[in-house]
Amino acid sequence: MKKTVILFIGILMISCNQEKNKKSKTNESVTELTEVMDNFDWLLGKWKRSNEEVGKETFENWDKKSNTEYVGASYTIQNGDTIYEEKFRLVKSSNNWSFKIELKGETKPSSFKMTSYTSQEFICENNALNYPNRKSDSPNKIKYWKNGDKLYAIISGKKIKLQFEYVKLK
Image (tube, rainbow, N blue to C red; front, side, top):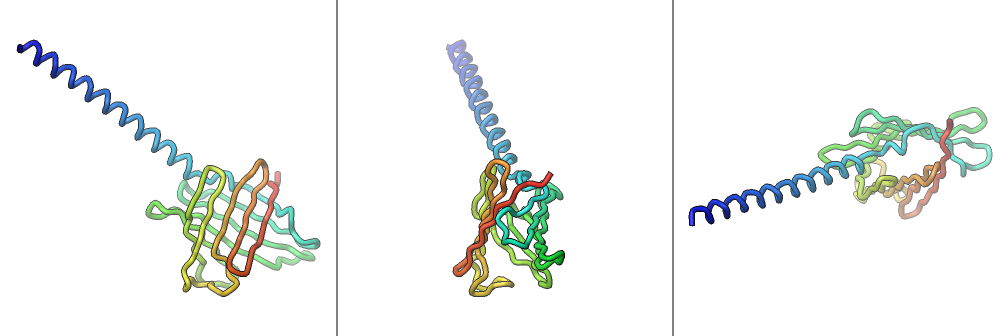
């Protein structure tokens, strides 16, 4: 009887240890997946808009400051003059990503909460009625994605929809 109890306890301990190892491997996989998904390095570099109006050139630049912050800037040139500028940041705070845009001359950036993302795309939205730059024609949704060697963006709202297509500069 003692041998049976000892054998039973031994089998039980081995079974519990195997289950613990399975859970540990699953947790490691989830951590690795999260780290891959929280990577927006596909944005990095200097980009030129390929679907810009004739006579204008628009550029967008992205840099990585840390694993939780990407910074960018966009500007449009016409007849040698800069006619439009904006700065933006993709930042992670309290486990949530946000896209913050600051137009030239504004004191406070507009903030868009990331609502979905994959390894090559993200969507950010701001549905608040009182965010700093809210106008009836202001955008409330920003979508970026990469397909092949091109970067795309759509900025949209109730009365606005702007589509951007960029090629990477060498």
